Amino acid sequence: MEKICWLCGGELPQEITEKLGTPITDLGLSGRAFNVLDRRGVETLEQLLCFETKELLRFRNMGEKTFNEIKQKVKLFGFDCWT
Image (cartoon, rainbow, N blue to C red; front, side):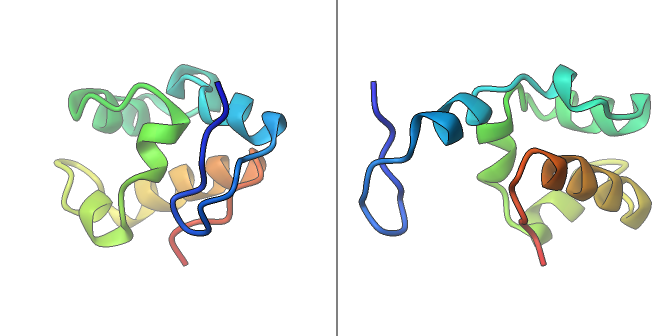
């Protein structure tokens, strides 16, 4: 099933669609960063990317250092989010 970009309405390439399904366990996060996301029920990269910076920073135990770690790991998967 093709995914549609919420921004432009076009179909996303298969490569991007596959990356979005990546479990957060595969991001290589520290225990603290993983636990912050896990407690909020975030299971995939796609779910994580739905949050804005201000929302993520309101997660319990999400400090600037943890946020920056998550941001860098997501960047390794080709998504430059939360500037």
